[in-house]
Amino acid sequence: MGDGKQTRDEEFQSFMVGRWPRLMRTAFLLTGEQHAAEDLVQSTLEQVYTAWRRVGAADDPEAYVRRVMINVHARKHRRRLREFLAPKDDSGLVREVADTGDRIAQADDRSALLKALAQLPARQREAVVLRYWEDLTETQAAEAMGCSVGTVKSSAAKGIAKLRAIPVLAETVTQERRK
Image (cartoon, rainbow, N blue to C red; front, side, top):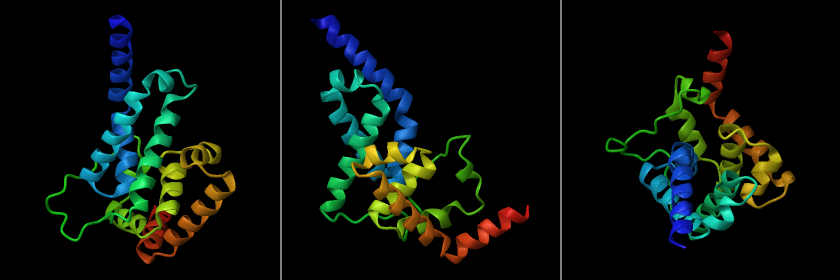
């Protein structure tokens, strides 16, 4: 019996270590703050650990964990906790470190994009983050958000439309196209 638990613990640890950077990035984009992102990932992994036998046996454990993260975040949001994607005084914050292949990290004004993302309602932000940062299909995003594909499509479209209406972002896109 002890060997089975040890094997499960090793599988969970391997999963957690391998997915930590991506989970942190997603959590940061959802919460907008490093400490809140760490709390979200830790809360998510705590729930996942208790159900690891079921999660590890799932067809796509990463999708399962993503769904848990969205649910944990949504529960906190329902309690009307305030989230700040760009705090007024961010001098003490540790900045998110982007993946080396992250095209968004190559943008000249990443902070403007994060501030704009903060202005979106939570559901639109979730849809935009999952579709465009995590590069999930509409079906995968719908599964993670616990809604229909149509809801993902409309939330993402509305979110992108709001982002495109922000002058600073429009200037950045225009400058990128000229290069």
